[in-house]
Image 1 (tube, helix red, strand yellow):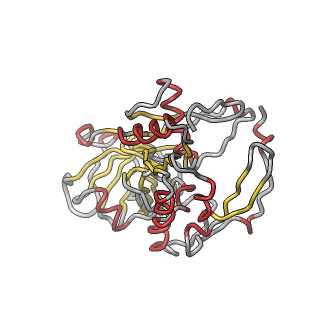
Image 2 (cartoon, helix red, strand yellow; image 1 turned 90 degrees about the vertical axis):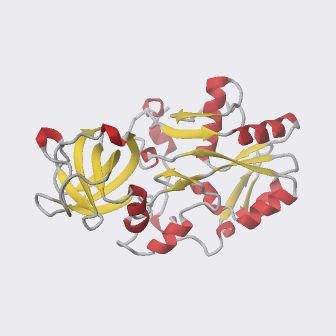
Image 3 (cartoon, helix red, strand yellow; image 1 turned 135 degrees about the vertical axis):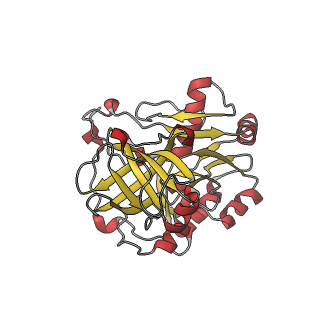
Length: 320
């Protein structure tokens, strides 16, 4: 199947750059599979289409403010780093960078107390190379590139305070590339609105966007109707930013993303299925998590792992 079979025109003026004041006021398209009828509604009207006994599954991953800015130590050039995932235990951090370059640099001397190794996206003038050192977050963190692989870098990070504390103070939310901001513009609003109301588990570098439209009031409406909402976790990774470049969609390889399905979610979803209810997944990340477990095990079971499932025609859904 050709990738360009899925091409369509999307005028830039139809790409929303800022959220509506009320999350659930966003538009919702309803497609009736029985007769092909289409309705244009609002997300706030979702309860009209669900019945008592149905289960709604959401993704409770939380976006971390993983975008940091700094400067190269050799040239002073601007550096942008988007942390993706921790790639090794901090104990595996080398005492020296590649070719004997010390990892610690920047403010202060000697080895800093908080050390970690992360995979990241690196943006700066000049190519990334092992041994390249730079400082981040106004010098509160020093970094050294350990390896370069497939568009990503592996970096050793050192600081005098925990990484998450620095990210919460100095990091920026990594918005999708189709949302345009000047540096610092709407930063406070984006930190709040680019999270779902049920975000709990830090680890994503992008929000599960379908869930952004749900509100506490809407979830309460579902509960009053007898619809149970349950949560799984899939930490959205860099695959969200990567375009499909293969000519045939079958040749595209999805990046693996970490997921966790807990006992409560299994019980809620299995109970709905046993009672003849529907399992409604909010967003593609939730769909892929549930379908990954079903494809591997044949039934829904609690556990964790990585999903690289690429759903494309003629995929047969097992649970959603």
